[in-house]
Image (cartoon, rainbow, N blue to C red):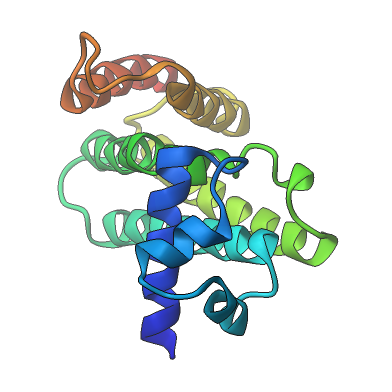
Length: 188
């Protein structure tokens, strides 16, 4: 059952990323899986529940990816931070609409779901706090206020979703390099 639920979430994410949250329908998500709309209700209470689970799925994956790099990444603190920036930008660009739900969860989710989302967001932010702290401890970073630095960094990277286009003048790789350059200027 876990595998089927994950398959549904991946299809729902695909539909949401293509159509946007408002335009995505349970019918389209079911059709993507060659299921009936009623079958989706076996796994999810409603569209809001399904979208919440998609959001949690994506954010949990992003947290795991960042944790892996933070714990096992090789290189200097700056190089590990660059890998974390690349992960964030990958999710921001590739999972744009689902990742956008992070910005305003209060508009979509109930109180219990909001608490879960905010806890995941806190975990996510904490991973960036950890790399900044590590850089300060090693003398690589000199920021006066690591919380403000993290908020500036995540705020700037989150805005990418509003303007980035794969057909634009910067490739995703160039975007990561450019953002990393500016982020390191904030931290050094």
